[in-house]
Image 1 (cartoon, rainbow, N blue to C red):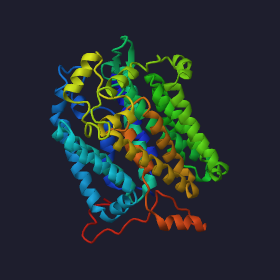
Image 2: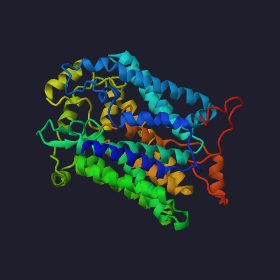
Image 3: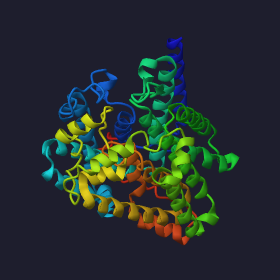
Image 4: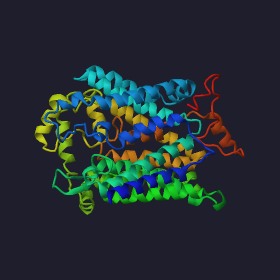
Length: 472
């Protein structure tokens, strides 16, 4: 039966790719680089796919984390090297993008400087190179000759590959797709990932993309509605909703619902014109989620959601790590807090071996201190302003970016999403980045007949002698 199901899933995946195919708008081949990067980080490392990796559950000592996996390091290094070649090849576009986002550049530079005061500078530097890989993947996606199509395809391809296979693993390969809770021994579903929260996270991201596509395709005229793509995206959305229910990750489900409401809300012209209403909607969404989690009034809400008031031990970890902070101004150094003696001590305190703060803002504080928090806050503020600017002339594309942006802010209340190689962090950057498009903005403001948006651009001319590098 499992073999039949596997064949059916493979055929189904191929069918989804065929339905999604659009010969009129094709992104560059370079898009496969961020695709592979996100597929790995949205599921499990290559070493664990080959059953060669070690998880924190099986490590005898926290020092094992310092070594890492040579195979995974080689894979990420190869992807990063190829990505940097593409980034250098697209030099002018990339430079323009970086110039338009100085705070993001400053944040990554500060992360590099913080390596100097890490207890393990070599490990911190290796992790910083992976952070540069995240930025490189964002640059590749945002400098694609057909940006709107690139974003759509990237989200669709990730979903087509991970969602059906997750269902297959859960139903027919339980050794791969299920696990047991370390808290009470209950069975939970992981799909292609290593834990239910990661499955919920990737479902949230893919689901927002699929919902965005389905919603706007249904709003289009029947004559202009791409039926095949609608079928593909509706099928993908069905997979996502089913998996969100199965994985029981309330953080991801709540953030998905929050982002979905913003996608719908930004599609109404009346709301777009009244910024105060949008501000109120965003603030209300974040305020409700934070109050339910961190204040007493949320106790009943948490019990209704099947969660205890300690957020499954998170608050105990928060109290412990705050008392271990030695340099609150600068932090422990980039991605260095959860290393060495500190991690050994925390593992001796918590039998379930935490390796993150389960709060993105606290995670940034532990590693980068108040300086890092200040830089992150600046990115959030400028990112929101960038979205408001985009909302004036392309509310449809802005809806998805706004959903990613706000969902990421809420997600980091109980999960460490502002970390290297986290899909939440990568798509937060996609949402926050301001793409310098003055001629497009002017065209939109003048009301020219030709519709333009942030994700479309005339392809740059291919240099002589490089035609064999198809739209790199």
